[in-house]
Length: 420
View 1 (tube, rainbow, N blue to C red):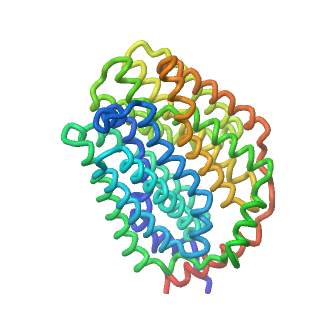
View 2: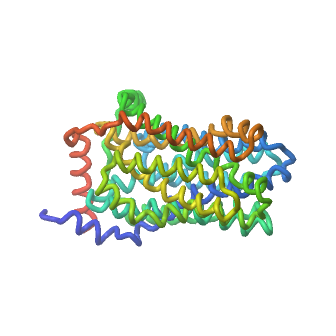
View 3: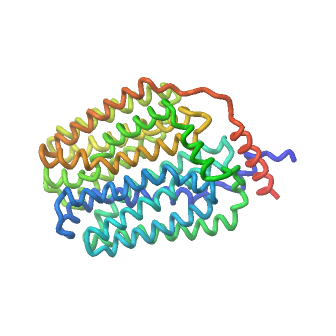
């Protein structure tokens, strides 16, 4: 009685005790961001052409995007703990399959398994934080969570570029090690602090869950999905060919390619502290429009870059612009359908990674026919096209739902249990 929920939760679950959640958000992008570094090498290792190797992108990212449409529902119907632990166990196994792959078909299988497992890690970790922490703590915690996620984009290419001097397979062994360490750490965390995760009001059946998903499909959600499709087709759609482009344009070595690819993550991390201030001063819609325009501009600069330093500076700028764009889009996704926030966010994230997985169908033929500069020019056009659904997307305003009230009651009782 009379317990200060915020104070109790702060004292019991400080950021150090949430460290396995932050490290867990790091592993997916750490692994995925290595693909552009290895892409030119794997063509010769597996003896395949660019078109054949491009299938690794949808194998991982399209699978990841599709599975996000139902991974949250599965965690609602079972438990956050079991879903997360299965996700990290499966991710480590999938990375090991990639490390040991003797040929492209086995490597593709590993990529598909990576995509499935990843859908049950980062999104469910974020959902668990939302279940557990009071509203006042979420902005600070999610900022750290997102920064750790972006650090994966930074360190993945750097580590990949260094390890390739010995063997590209060592990188996937490192991903296996990290995934299983985090899984064990989270097993210990749930044993010690699992009572802090409130019991969620669950769907009565899978049919009820699917009915809720269908109800969330409205025009606002469709615009959010369109934003995610067009924006990520521009921002990350060409990422898998980035190493190939740098090799073809300037014959760079793998270590330098890894350094340049890592600059996207550097830009995102550098701009993270400023992003919140811009959103507060300019508003979500204006910030999103500025972000998209900046994305298009930096990609044009990549397309016309006369040398590697110019390209690297433009790619750093893309990371800055993307940080503002995705943060604004995430807020728009949450506000688009207040009564179905979780489902709309799942559609947003699913569409974002699905299009990244399908992008090779568009960009590989363009690259082969017209070259890397034409590929970047096309992606800048797609960034500008995303301004159209943004123009018609207006946040919906609705009072707090009954679900929110139930969640607050659960969180309050959780804080009392933590204090006892």
